[in-house]
Amino acid sequence: MEFSIPTNWQEDFISGLSFCDEENEIKEVYGKLFLDDVGGGRVASGLPFVSKKAAERHIEQLKKNRYKFNYLLNAICLDNFEFTSIGQRKIARLLDWLTDIGVDSVTVSNPYLAMWVKRNYPFFTMSASAMANIDSVRKARFWESLGVDKITFPGPVVNRNFPLLKQLRGSVKCKIQLIANNSCICNCPTYIGHALMSCHASQKWHKSKGWIFDYYVAMCRLARLNDPFNFIRADWIRPEDVDFYSGLGVESIKLVDRRLSTDMLLKIVSAYQARAYRGNLADLFPVLQGKSFISHKDWFRKILYFRNIFTVNPFKIVKFSSLLSKIEVFIDNTKLDLFLKKLPQECDLTSCKECGYCKRVAMEVVSINTNYLENMLRNYQDIFDSIFGNRSGQK
Image 1 (cartoon, helix red, strand yellow):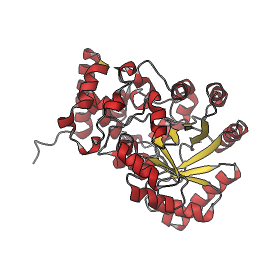
Image 2: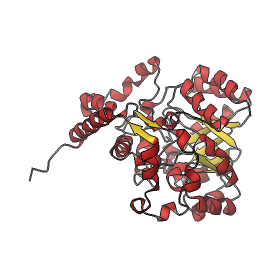
Image 3: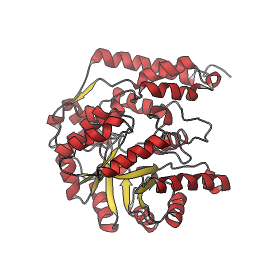
Image 4: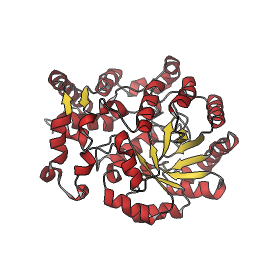
């Protein structure tokens, strides 16, 4: 199994990485500038700032340590910017820079951009992003025909659909990659909406200016608190199950998240390389861990996100951020060793209400403090009332 892991651009990341990669399974490090002309899968205001010069030095050092670098160009929508002459000039300028600094590969979600890169920069190895939502054999073959060398399949649809995984492995020659620790709810109905929101909030020309209320994350977290079975009905892959997926033909595991501190990133990487983590499984899922990592120096630069302060209520910003604190949940990983073996093979074709498997498992392995839960549910209600307002009594 190969691993693709994120960089947070911090100075201690590369030195720490050398200590946890004893098996040489990490083949690729990925990342991107916090804002650029294409955008990606994370809101810019949650990412650590990095200048082009610092990124260049970081990538050079990674390559000296034998790691290949994948730059993310994985915005699903460029708002038709890619079809304008100025847009194409700016995208070309970005790709010229990636060429000059020795980037090995790029990840894309937009078919036009994939064809544009393949035609003009054929020396890049190219991956299709999970945000391209490639969830069928036909879609996989289409993207392979565009020249991608690796496909990252969307976890909410594919990670637990074992018959589909087998079909995909037999239908394409390119590498199959899955994301292990996003912990998105399976068959998430807001997956595309969240992807669109994130990519626009990481494009430097977009009117969002790199900042947005991440309503989708808050809604997802609320769904878990309202019904803890959603902690289990998710697309995570446990460290202990990596070899199971290898047996299905999966060649690469991608780990997240670019917003994390070095210590937390390396803790996640080490667990997956060891194929074991005998504590709280939630420790490995950034979406449950609360506010993203931002160093002090970044705050000075990120003042720009609030320059339009009169269009955003600062009190709502503070209240909303409280929803994104760490979820105080314990998921007992020691009780999940037989989880995949007992998971219904036709999971996607079965109603959760009729099946009840994840709900039964959640009752055994998920623990949440009652006082914390009641307090957080009240906070969500208050803040959502504040965000949405209440105009039901008005004509």
